[in-house]
Length: 348
Image 1 (cartoon, rainbow, N blue to C red):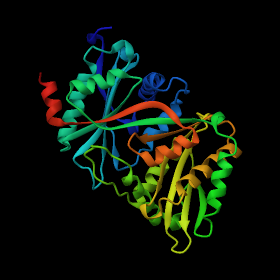
Image 2: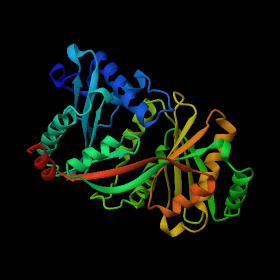
Image 3: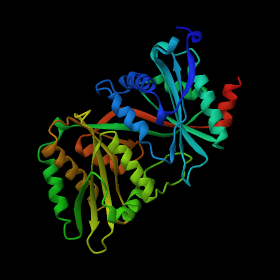
Image 4: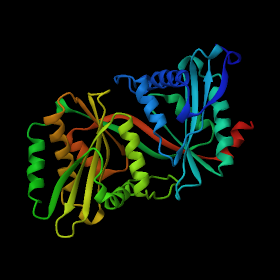
């Protein structure tokens, strides 16, 4: 179908119409099928709940391309503006185009709208990610002059491939640390009386490898952390957060946070695992991972796969995951491009 039979319009994601939500959900699932061909689609209500519960410090300007007479959305582009003290120089963006509508200039048009919005917000740098299953994304980023900032993988463990006795062995090694450390679990919401210490625990995300990405460390407030939590639960996720506390000081030493959605019962997601530098080399990371997998085995037999994202340069975590049996599932690249570069491309 030709470009003349489409029209670009904005969508206000927090207060879109039912028609807009339904069309956006259908388009997103069409792209998702290319990324994750073995996963079920996202239900419409989950999409609505996600959009309507976005944290107040997150703005998502979005434009969509409608086919003739608003019959369906065939392309979409959004900017993610995080309104925090850090990283006010940059924004994330995403552009997706249905297969039958590619190579018609729709991505370029959407990029122009996103770039203009980023300029109004005084953002000089845009970032996005591409995956190897959609090679057109990498080609587009090369055309606009973007540079690779970080290469990573989604790694996946098939529960059927877990080595017999491995989890019990790792748990036994962890128990040997029990005099020095205590392993505990939060199911669901964080305890209110520990929220400030949990904020500090979240700072471990800043110690992940970031490659050449031009980003600043992020420090969430307790209020922001609770707002993110509300969005997670609104989307239907259930969360387990295993954590280790040093008995002598009462300080958190590390944690692993995991989420699971009954809409996709076969897949369990590991969001973050980290140990503070002063406690590394003791086996805490393995203890945390083993506790998580043991709980999955005992309480979620429907889970067939555990997935996690890792920078290719994160040797320590990759070693733990490799020993557990995780294997590369999907390659991902995070790109960054200066607004000036994009304008050069758009003005050609």
